[in-house]
Image (cartoon, rainbow, N blue to C red; front, top):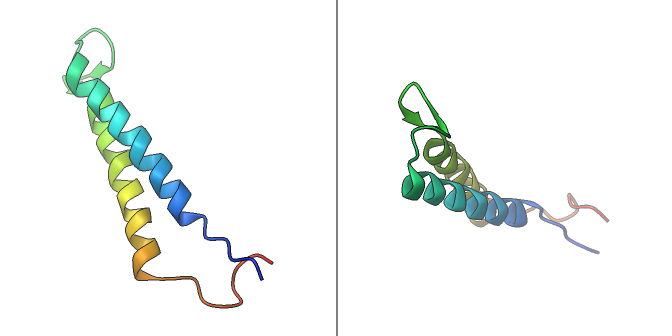
Length: 72
């Protein structure tokens, strides 16, 4: 039986992309691009993506897949 839990790769993907986007937004901080109404959109959305990725990674530790409920 093959057990496939997609939460871990998705969690790593969103965490990595979120960290990169947030870092880019914080380091560049260019007011002409990536800002709306004084907010740094890249930094905020990077943080949102990173938090979602971390939540996905934490869900893999808290709730392991039950036997027989994975793809076969």
